[in-house]
Length: 472
Ligand code: AMP
Ligand code: MG
Image (cartoon, rainbow, N blue to C red):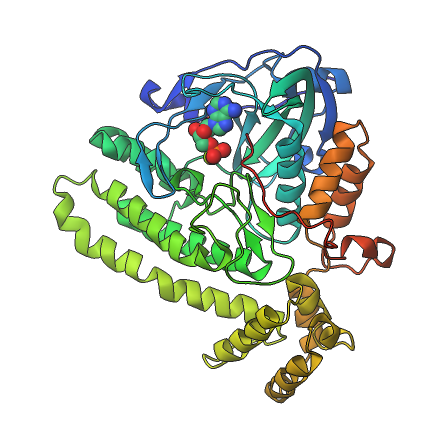
């Protein structure tokens, strides 16, 4: 069988100013280490043999129909505007339309230098590639919009970070790679024509019902508000919510120093470079609003008189905090077994999170245990939980089946950070068993899997990963 990818490349049909044509740079000895058969089927891809796929997904062979390019974008990084970022270590091979009718990008990440590489080597090492593979697929299984992972290849070359590390390439699939920063780059240049083309393209591709730039803004706001609430609901901390890492589609994108919280605290930060805690767990909703304001500013620049749109744009952005609260309440209400939340339930949930914070409770295991005998064991002072649970039980009286609601809302399995680190350490030694095991278990996060209970366990003091690093 020969690998066949039915490409139809709409981005490559946009004017040349949107990207640079760029072939991936070949590597020494590609070896396929993971291939996502289910996703391939969805994308209408016919798999080939392992060697052929290794060559294609390493970038050594450009498959028929591909039109490889590096996309241009800019972005605010930790609040500072950087006028030119772009795909510095990735190329978009092209797009396919899936069996579900959805158009998706197929991108190689770690595939060599591009005109946007600045000082970087254009490469990725195995650790972040496997991390993104596992976490993005886990997010998908958790029902959270996300880019996905089609393949991972070892390059047979070393990548130098602080030490030599095995190089790798990830094949990433996204409903598009349009970012807030894609709009910002043209706005900053005052290129109205490009902004209009990009707005039309984004509307057609993601929100065909949206009316003009302000319609697009509102649609992105809605998608982002829902997404961030879902992140909060599983204790996910993205880590680098720069505007270049915010997808217009509302998918989670750019898994770098991301992590899931173990012991709950709202101020949790993992990223080693996030010294001010800008992207801490509980800051994520505020940051999403800030990022939307940047998108609004960029979109307005295409109007003949940008001032004339300010009022409407402001209204759209100002509605986001309430939307975030509504989605948050919906998500967390389900986590405590409620179908139709009332405004006052926010305080009940807030009280639980407060005693979790004060009692070093594990986020995932506490919610999964709610309503069972073991819930109180998650708290250093179990009596604090008992008191809360009494009020909670009273609130549950008319709920027909809270247990079922909670089981569908509270995963048993998340990609715990210490397990990611152990999985990467094993893979570097050539042992892919932990990688495959995590993939299998995390594909069914809401199902009890007693034989995999060790993957529910929070890290021991020795296993805690204090900081995570950007996926470079
Ligand atoms: P990130 O923080 O991973 O979202 O990346 C921010 C910017 O840095 C993007 O433009 C990336 O393409 C670029 N970048 C990250 N790592 C590398 C690398 N190893 N080589 C070249 N560019 C990179
Ligand atoms: Mg990025």
